[in-house]
Length: 574
Ligand code: GLY
Image (cartoon, rainbow, N blue to C red; front, top):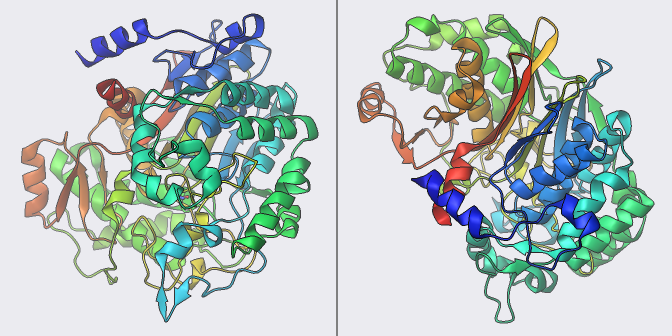
């Protein structure tokens, strides 16, 4: 029934593809009407999956022009900054994990960096962390890294020119597209804060400061101009040119700390991926400043200490929840930017997993993990912030990009004349020991604010190999639930041999130690929920959790999979 509804809606919408655009310019308001969140090129050699059909179609348009999976992924990333700018964009940061056709394996860190003037207590007012400062406005933003990271990976492994992967998204920004129901919902939820910044209000609100409704046309001419300037001048426009100057001036006038020099000093970092083994596969994850690679490996190592195939469903969910709880407790204590703090990579050792496994009872929850219980904004936990793009080709390029401006529309600041939404990634630092960020995550000194430091992230782009051959790329959006989603997809697809789409469809759970609550998708059978309660879990039901993207190599074919929960939600709202 839901699928029928989607098909009917798609049939009555005008159809526009970027390919059409070359020969046949379209009017504003025409757009790609497709449910192709996950697409494969006609020859089957390149596949991409994203949370937006426009972005996936732009990626495929680039493939039609001779691009490979790296070009496709970057084209999708720029397009998502246009159509899904509440989640990601060039005013934010990203992690890119890539296996290139020539065998190189790179972890490209385009995470935001705190400005040079940042100080440990910059968000503490009268002895208490003030979340408003780290979430909204000038102080909330870190120096964005996405443009530099996109440029880096595209130059290292793409086949096209950098401008070729930007300009399709510039055209889309210029011509406009209809506001999706999901974007309309985010606009409604953030309108009051967007209204505080005239350049943001001018794009996203109407003349009465009301949020643009679903299906109205959103054109972003300034953003198109910024994309075109980057296409022409390269990343130097952003880091050493007009964009950096405009941002520095705005910051100075509005109480921010980021300067032109901070932009000039921004550097992409090449990191060593975290390597681990699970169910006979080799996994590569992203190292600090991501916590994703460490804790995905740690949780799976703990699970492997048990006979997973013999556990009843409730016992298995219980075990996963306990393993997550121990891992997130470690995250709060140990994790931070590895350039500033020593993160013990022994967290991913099997011996360490054995020690934790001995503390886990299959009958009841472990009660004595010491932690605080600061307030948690459940609303933020439930929203699907951030975005993930999976791309792969038959030449051996396998790409996992997770990209974000942090919470919806980041800091809510658009730098006038640029159309660029600045992130609020400074909130991912631990503003004060024990103070929760927007996702309820707490941290220690390891993740305290410092000049030029990168805030800790949960983004978990992951690549999976079998006998040295890449067989899967995956990742997710959704704050700390990213780690939980990736763990569960890997568990079901690698240990239980489910096709990845089935693995992603299983009822998900999330337990992040603080709050000490087990979040459970409503799809989980009631009997299992009851058994989990009997084991001591404080259960909260979520209608649906997460937004994962993956590509799996199956019988010699690339199978891209986009998050069904997102597709179904959009279909329902239509
Ligand atoms: N901003 C969310 C994350 O990086 O985990």
